Length: 74
Image 1 (cartoon, rainbow, N blue to C red):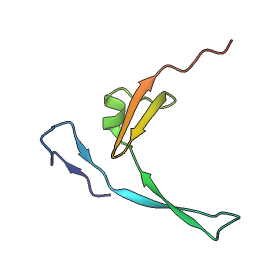
Image 2 (image 1 turned 30 degrees about the vertical axis):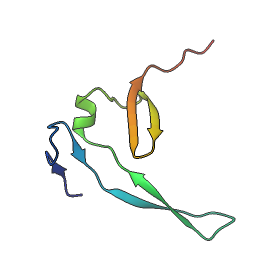
Image 3 (image 1 turned 180 degrees about the vertical axis):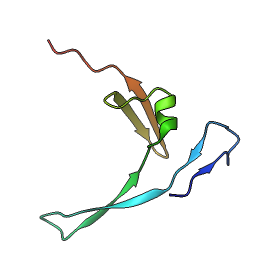
């Protein structure tokens, strides 16, 4: 994957490609859905560790990913 960085005004911004993800379905032959991959040491450096939890908030044209603590089991 070609890494493109620092192409916006924000030095902490990344430009990522949206890939097709193929899924087989019983009711259809197949369906392609959009896939955005976030991986790399930079993700870990900003606090997103393996095994952690995130909250994803979305609206038209925007996705916000925030690190959260998992809810405690009662």
